[in-house]
Picture 1 (spheres, rainbow, N blue to C red):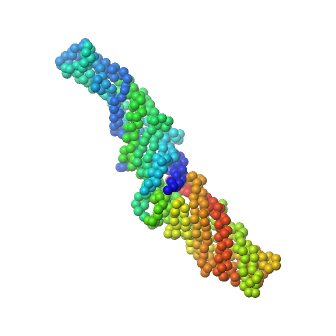
Picture 2 (cartoon, rainbow, N blue to C red):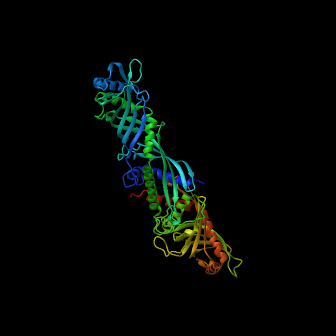
Picture 3 (cartoon, rainbow, N blue to C red):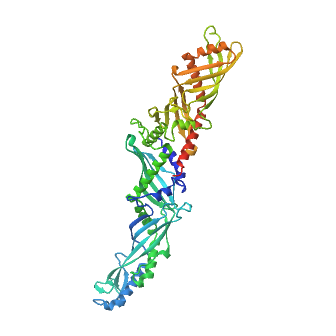
Length: 557
């Protein structure tokens, strides 16, 4: 099956999603999104990120040295006493590297985001799945934060121990040391931090689905997974603001400067600033609350956009259990055919046709078309009116009703039978009958050219049409009228002429035009004229659709 419709929708909506001032902008959507309980989704928070061990270079050794200097100052007070000259401090061999954990984490600036073209677009049994790339921090709109920032508290833990200077073996005797532990201790430093995140992007795996059945159906968007990444490399860039890094007072005073250096080194570590922080960021973005909040916000916005364009469904939504179209395509078509038949909808068919321009379809100007000859009765059966040519104006194409049962979608094409001249009429839609009237020219006998006027009326009538659509987005939407045919029952069709310079020809011509075969000939001429003008009819339909949809999509809330 083709994914053309969903690609068209994506291409139409992306410029609007990426415009911070637009009613449907993605920044506004994320700013207003809420999690369960009504709390704002942004900024995203996380209680704890355990980043594990990090390579902090030589700083762990320096921490161990300073720790041992603290031991030396109280060694004689230890129980039992410690021979300070016999030992030295080193990182614990079984865990020589410090471990870094973050808490009370807050991520700000994620509303500064742009969406890209979807990839991996695939039809599923319930809708479509796709991947949408996002880039963060690239919009220069002054209403948006210009930087993605992660702030919170950190805890840096270092295991240290005392070892014999001569043997490098760990001291075995345990002693009670005031404020410390011997021979193994666990040194902790805590404080606040701030990281600027640049080059941040993400891939959003999502699917659209139609839920419910028949009139209770709704179109939903579900975010399955958010995968943060770098734009130009594998990972984003995390830059520590050294001025923001604090050391809590609880840290040993002698260790503070070294501890500060180790914390800086830990945040600069390529594993921390690459895979570990990105994995932690991913965990924060993929909580059930976050995924549900974004899914709900997108679903609500999609519903709002559909209601703006086609009007809300206030009655029964058209449905067809036997349809084999993609379920999203069928749902959107059912919304369309329901709207076309709903006089309260902005997509009400009479209003659409009455609003056409370039060319105007109500009334519609027909150029010349021929109906051949009109055979006259005795005694003029050998002298028909020949080269009968008509032109003029058609009134009543907007007096049009498409019952939902008379419209169908098949492989991207819409076929419909439109009932004409059945509505009482209300400006700018004319009442019955449907009519075509204008000038007439013909030849009669030996070079006798006749002129006059013609009038064809029908009430009711029917117009059968098949339409297909093209264009990469709304701005380039095109409508191709694949076929069009006007039909009316003989008893509902009246054709008259008024020839200005032959009373005899006028009488016999009108008698002839009461016959079914002559009605069929005139109707065939009208249909040939309509068929020749299919491109311009499609042009008018495309223009009114483009203009109407854009106005309603871009309408301020």
